View 1 (spheres, one colour):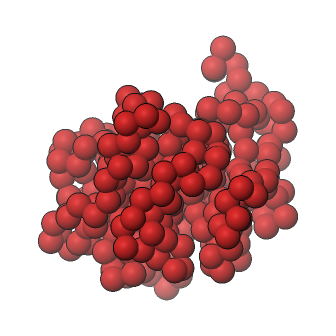
View 2 (cartoon, rainbow, N blue to C red; view 1 turned 120 degrees about the horizontal axis):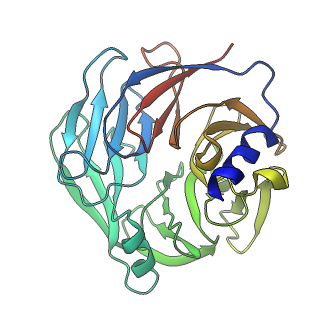
Length: 287
């Protein structure tokens, strides 16, 4: 049944003009959960099955992955900290997410990007599947097996059940720090918009046609123009979402994409990137 629904989803979302090409950078890296391109132009991704759960770094597209932090229990989302370190979620597992609704044990690490180690920062989150940082230093975390988002103040204080978004996964904050966007996984596929100043104000920002309702939306990214990019896991695609909510398929034929990252112009990683549950790191090149 899931295969049939996935096949329907692959054609339900119109392409973004000519489909982008994608090329494989690395393969067989384990079950990959998240990816980000740092301000310094290097790419980082997490594997839940290598090195006991690990964060890896690619210095160039041709380079071998370098382990930056290992032994991370179920690594989850990634975000950039103000001081150049990375914020890395842990406790991102189905069991942890289900238990996290009543006994939250997930949290956040601060990681030195050059391999200088990881230090605990926050505990008591539901899952830390998706992680996003606002311009004022506030961090948000999601639980795709839960009903609410968690909020972490810049000083590390946790506010549980801050906003209600069932099965939220990938998270991003807009450049102005006004809205938080959340992709939903185990509901009808949609991207919700949360007004940060009024978290009770949650609206549907984008929703694909009903034929793509079971697309298992996963990781989320945003570019300088406010366009969103979402990994449509069940459809094997990466979608682009315009600021007005229009959706189109940017790339097809990926094997269970789990997260996307916008590159940095002028660096070795200037394209769009995706990772998959099958262990691939790919570059998506616009036509």
